[in-house]
Image (cartoon, rainbow, N blue to C red; front, side):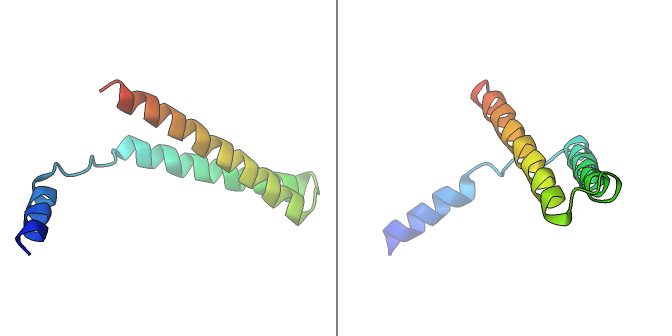
Length: 79
């Protein structure tokens, strides 16, 4: 039991995770708005079809997530 307690104490002393900045939240909101706009543009203006528009928007969203992940990894490795 004391071993478990030591592990828990070590976890509690760890530094808290970094908070997300306000600029990051705003950038995510803008990206989400643009993706919804892209979906609506493809569906209503270009008349692509619902499934095609969802797929195109989802693909663009996953590409953005991949870019954010790579940039975050590079920034974290420089610290």
